[in-house]
Amino acid sequence: MEYDVNWKETYKDMIMTPKKAMASVRSGHRVFLGTGCGEPTVLVQAMTDMAGTLADVEIIELLTKGDAPYADRKYADCFKVNSFFIGHNVRELFQEGRGDYTPILMSDIPGLFNSGQLPLDVALIQVTPPDARGKMSLGVSVDIVRAAAENASLVIAQVNPQMPWTRGDSLIDVADLDILVPADVPLLERVSQPVHAVSARIAELVAALVPSGATVEFGLGRVPGVGRVPQAVMHALHDKHDLGIHTELITDDIIELIESGAVSGARKSTDRGKIVTSFCMGTKRLYDYVNDNPLFSFRPTEYVNDSTVIGRQNRMVSINMALEIDLTGQICSDSEEGSFYSGIGGQVDFNRGAARSPGGRAVIVMPATTRDGKSRIVAALSSGSGVVVSRGTVHYVVTEYGVAYLHGKSVQDRTLALVSIAHPDHREQLLKQAIEARYIRREFADVEGRFVIASQDVMKTSFLLDNGTQVNFRPIHPTDEPLMRDLLYDLSKETLYYRFMSHNQRFGQKQIQNFVYVDHRKDVAIVGTLPEAYGDDIIAVGRYYLDEHTNRAEVAFVIRDEWQNKGLGSFLFRHLITIAKASGISGFTAEVLRDNKRMQAIFNHSGYKVQSRVEEGVCSFRIEF
Image (tube, helix red, strand yellow):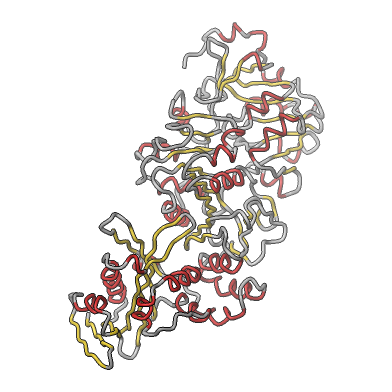
């Protein structure tokens, strides 16, 4: 982009020094500061230098990246900070009770300015120099800056040639500004930190929820000790294809994702081929990358965070972080241990939008524990913790221990799902607390010692059918109880008879619990699943029970009727053998009805030494490894 080289002469009547420009700020004024790395640092410092002449100036900000000199205790009578999101530079201010936090959906903030509910006396923003038409770019921060500039009584712009010219809806006319302050200074930078091991594990699980062709949002915020978990997910998506991006924030991590070939935006429903964002925070590398780059479309918050716009994207996946969640599914993401920590940001906007999207997924990510080992999954939220996402609108929750799908589930089912992805050290206590709170039935006290979530490393695999369908195999979870019930009651009479050697077609609560509560050491149960928008659909179950006296395990499995004769039984049997051999088990035994020829064929053609005998219509098998 070519700037007007004579702009300083053309607009000389609007140009002032920082000190003279800040003389326009009066005591009692409400002053808006530009967002993130687009913060006009020269203007902010000049305003702070005038603190001795000011009193009760209210600073309005979304999120700033600078040193926030105005937040120093010595300026307590001069400046009062009112923030929509609490960043690291002002967190101490809020935790000491010296700042005002305004909890609000990101999408609603521009409306505060537009309606006059939150009138602005002054807006301090940063822009590029003007082009020959008198147009300037808001650069790295369009977000709520545009609405602030359009509604403030006085707009003072720091004009910086180092600000990148961004495409989209970032332009502002010089005629809409009041004062120009030239400042050729480097932009603030945010350096991406190495991905924490916990974040990497969570990212791996989230990546499995993101199909190629999806449009993705990577939320704001960070979790103490493990960093920005949503941003870490980008590193796990490099093997995807035709991803789209519609997100409020981008960082340097987006560059590697684009250059991996995973992003094209070709399958987006709107803004096809464009990466839509409202602001970016990164290094000069990112700023150079977005500069005049037609791939990026920087749009204001009222568009980017509009849940209706978000919901129009097919397969929209929102990824946002939480700090705490209770067993009913209430999400706290703006406070920790009773103190305000961050903010609502766009979490609710994108959670709603993704939930409305055809094939969309709203994902909440969170490490299972705090830095000092306390569980972030709790029976009841900590005192002072605020609910950002209600229990009625939560969908997926992911920790490093697994994925829980909660939407449309009963309190009992979601409680069991969340306990299953808590840290193993806390599961038994959480289960006891859930029983005491009557979230789950009293009989679950009998399964406390068996509430075990198996290691995924050996037990997870997949099988591709001839028709191209991929069936995923994993250990059974305690949360599979309703899915197991559905499978059992969907089986034909013949299949039930062959599996259980009984014509009884009723399964009590206790019996179904015994199917899903296994220790995965002596008893192993593997389910074959098909992914659905609402979670897994179980089509096969295989398990074995170890007899420690003989070091042999009794094996059995069942396949949903419409999926039989497709090779699933043979594959599941081989997979169970692999798991058993890894555990040092010497062989399998099995009891099969004489009429069940297909099961007998699986054993006889296994490639292992097989002995069998028939007695009273039942074939007894012994398979040696």
